[in-house]
Length: 386
Image (cartoon, rainbow, N blue to C red; front, top):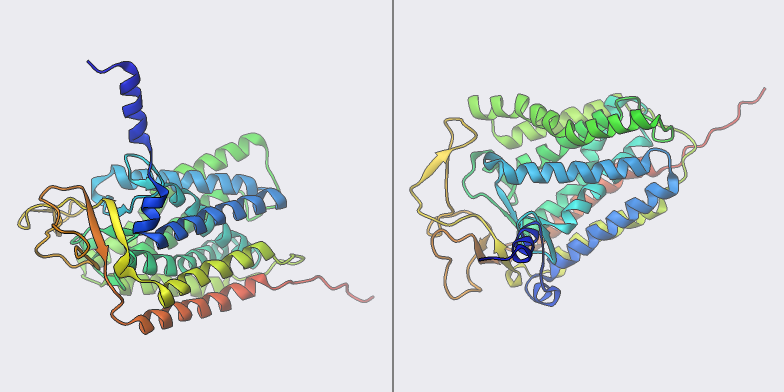
C-alpha cells in the first residue's frame, strides 16, 4: 500500500517536475536560449517596475497572475487545449507549462504597456497600441519557435487551420485581444501608472485584471472571429488583418503623447537582444537538428473525428501519423510513435528557403524599430516666454 509520503511526492510531481539541462541542451539548444531570453526579460521588467515605482510593481505582478490564469484555462478546457510545449528544465501543471512561459507574459505585456503608456493618455489608444506592441513582440517568437519545434499545435483543429509560416493566425488574434482586455481592466480607474490608489481599490482592480480579462478576451475573440469564420467562411488571416488595421487606425486617432519621460535604456537594450536572437536563429540555426521530447498531440486512428467547440466543424481526435500536415517529422528516431502515445519524440525540418526567413525576420525588425522608436523619443516641456 502506498505510503503518505509517496503519494505526496507523486502529487507534487504532477505540479512541478525538473529535467536535465545538459540533455535538453543536447537536443534543443535554441529552446534553452529562448527560455533564458524570456527569463532575463522577466528580470529586466521586474527591476524596471521596482525602480520606477508607482503602479508598475502591481502591474508586473498582475501580468504574471493573468498569464497563469490564461495558461491554466487552456490546459483545462478540451476545446482550446490545442498546443503542446517542448520539455523545459522546469515544468508545471503535469508537464504542460514551462517556467519561461510565466515570464513571457511580463515581456509581452509589460514592455508593450510601458512603451504604449508613453504615447497614449486615452484608454482606447493605450489598449489598441498595447495590442499592436504585443503582436510585434510575439511575431518572431512564434515564427521561429514553431520552426525549431519549441511547441506544436493540434494538426486539424479548424480554429488554427489558417496559418502563416505554420503559426495559426488565431495566435496573433488571441494575443492582441487578450492584452487589450487586460489593459481595460487594469486601467479601469484611469490611464495612470504614477498614481497609486487605496489598498482596497488596488486589490479589487488587480482581481478584475487577473480574472476578468480572460473571459472578456474570450468574449471579444468570439464576437468577431467565430461568426465570420464559422458562419460566413471568412479566412482567419482576413479577420486578423482587419483587427490589425482597426488597431492601427485607432492608435493613430487616439495617440496623445506624454511629456517629461526619460528613455528606458534597459528595455531598448533588451528588445535589441530579443530581436537579434531570432535573427541569429534564421542565419545560423539548424532546425533539422532540433529534437523535441515530451508531451505532444495524442496519436491514434485517422478516421475518428470530433466536433470543434460544439459547432458543425470537425477535427481529428488524434494525430494521424500516416497523414498529417505539420512542420516536423520523425527522421531522428528509429520508429514512429505507437498509437495513443502522448509522450514521444519529434524532429525539426530544415529551412526550405533560409533567405526567405531572414528577409521575413528583418522586415519584422524594421517595422518594430519604426513603431517602437516613436515611443522611445524624449518629449520635453518647454517653458513659454512671457
